[in-house]
Length: 446
Image 1 (cartoon, rainbow, N blue to C red):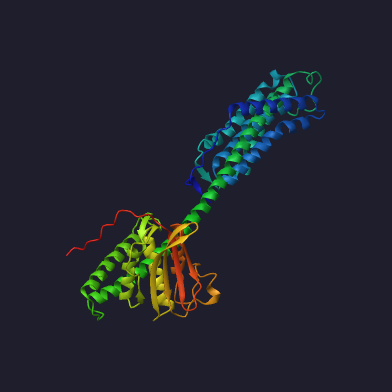
Image 2: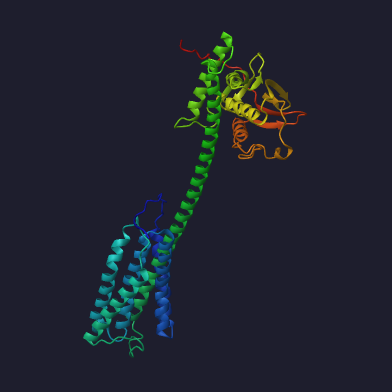
């Protein structure tokens, strides 16, 4: 059980228009008065007059149970005591004699109802409070008993009597006995209108909170999946950087020409910058900033780093830029995942990377292809190859190809496995981009 402020996200509530409340009160008063005037059995008239108040009280309690806020529960108790039990007690006492004789009883009954309702009316003003430990039934029965006892005691002390049925001769035709049914009916009509609005608001707030919770869970799941993909790609890039660093520091013996060594240093710097962006606190969208990217220059540092890691990869061959619409970071992540997939599932195989421009009826596309001469992809995995967690290697997470496909699709492209006689061939296809100003080369501090 909880008792305290409402810390849930607020849902705006529309107040009930005053005109609608007035119309409901008038309809309740007319209906209760008409039934009381023509009903042959007075208890039936009393039951009909009180029925809207009872229904409104039940609806308010339902609103409390749905939303948890204490305001509808306290409003229900205040309504039942001040608008129902008090006037009903006064009606029971005033129907047996002239109003002058029962005026003290009526005043005591109404005052008792108001006094019993006052604490609940005051508590109902704290709309933000949440209380799930209320016992409205016990409170209503106890307070109603006190009001009835006060009215009965006043009736006994004044000798005015108690039960209004049967009414003395001459009083049935008097207009004043119809005032209590009219008052009860008016109160009940307005209360019923407000209770329906309160219940609708509680149900709507609960629905909105439920939808917000589902949306929050979906965002959390999407963020968690994206975080897993970023960490997977960062680990792959760091492994290539570690291998390249081992070559540069001499830990792994290799004879490197000066140009190759410089290319390897540039590749290490590019990969480290990419890892920084992947692991940044405020991570950018998966595709980074869309623009025009040269597939050849974007793939070069990744290929160089993986070559230092021991992968037998060639390409892309020197040539003119192959421009595509997309993000350079996204292209490098796709290439790194494809090379990681080749090294993991086709160890020792020769891998070739190529880029080209493809002309199709719908326009031009920039195409990057990664081919290896390994054992290929098992036939059962062809349909689910790009699903996260699907892999033929029990030691693999199965996230690389899923990440690569998401990155390609986010840039408006596609990644697919092509049919091949030997090994595996993956094709990254992006919309072709127009030529732009050349990108300034990264310079290294000497």
